[in-house]
Length: 151
Length: 151
Picture 1 (tube, helix red, strand yellow):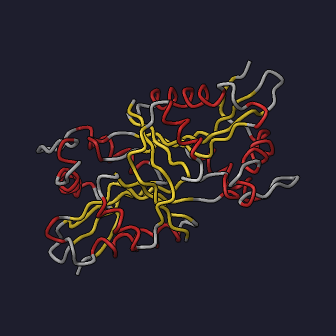
Picture 2: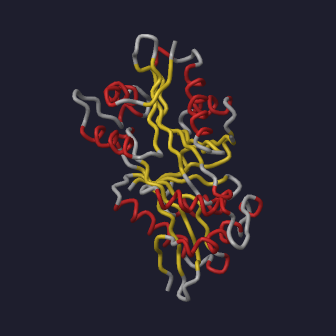
Picture 3: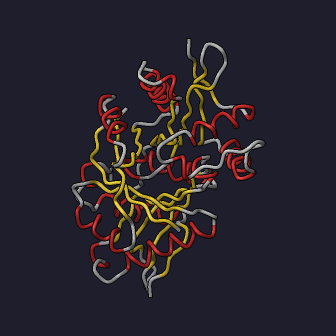
């Protein structure tokens, strides 16, 4: 039975492999042993920020079956509403299609509710139509454009 | 001459008025004197989070001409890349059309670069085509869907 929990430092190599095992991640990530120092620095920055939650899905044998990052963002607009944001969602190939992704997102939504968020949002690359349909089935509406600029 | 700086507590009533003076904000915000306690709580939460920057544009007479919120988000993906996110951007009606918005966004981008971010992103409601064009002119590309779910 799969369970969900906050990521530990020992999970980092498995998380990096998950991020790299992806259509877009392939060219963006660096898989090495030990993991690249930039991942270590990023893990430490996430750990140091009480408004970030890096989470993993763990399968019955203790293997890392998925990961996601949840950010809790305070804001003035909508009468001072906290919002939650989900990103870097990955489910291991072998665990896809069995509802794990949906349960993981609902687990993340529960964490957002616990933290007083009244909105959860995410962006999905337009080249991932399956991902967009997945989130729409979970009750998300694609009513925003997601814009970015590299620095 | 307009300048940009971190918001102070004394700016809060003017920021709330700006947020409310907007097509979508009108129904979402509460303008009162003193400001609603929820705005006070949100302002305190933003102040307490070193990865949030609430900023204002100040005109030559010291009036609040605009506001925005910048979030600095650590993450593992893209080899541990920090990303910056801009939201709740508002420019006072009387200050629109003169390039203030562009200069304010570029000021925010500079803060993101200072903090080591290599990507800046934002979402814009699809019912705001002018805003989307504005960001595209500033070099943003709308390659993501922005999805949200109310909690």
